[in-house]
Length: 196
Image (cartoon, rainbow, N blue to C red):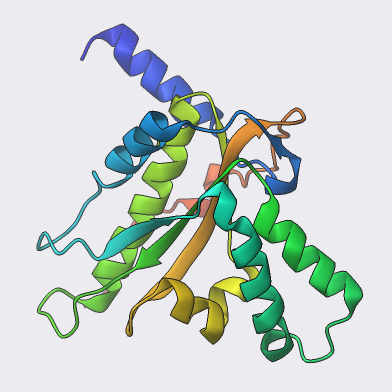
């Protein structure tokens, strides 16, 4: 890797931002681009080579079925849901040009701790966002009630699996805003050995 390659890689990492799925517009990644994004996402630390995650793509023509699923699941998640909640669920299903659902699929029981496998799923999700950014698109990682709904989980997951998030991909429909970042001094500390 050359110095220029390192510089552009660092620039990529320093400029990645999440986009609001509701603001995303076409174009989104094409089939070959999406395959490349997912191949990069799969290149993640994976202690034990267990592949404790997987990706579920939701095609454009399946978005109405997703909207229907969310509408049916909504009363369990929000018992007093009103018309605005249902409208938002339908909007959620149809936003952004591309949608990938990342699923945590741990191998249990196994000598590799469940926590390590879940961290690997999170790393795969982050790689997905970085690859999306590297190809010139924007991504948004969304959870919300749908990620924790048993009915929605059952539609995407096998027993023992969980939804890591809904990953909406597209082009930014408006300028992305830099969110406030905590000063490193509040996040980093030097380890001091405990007194014996």
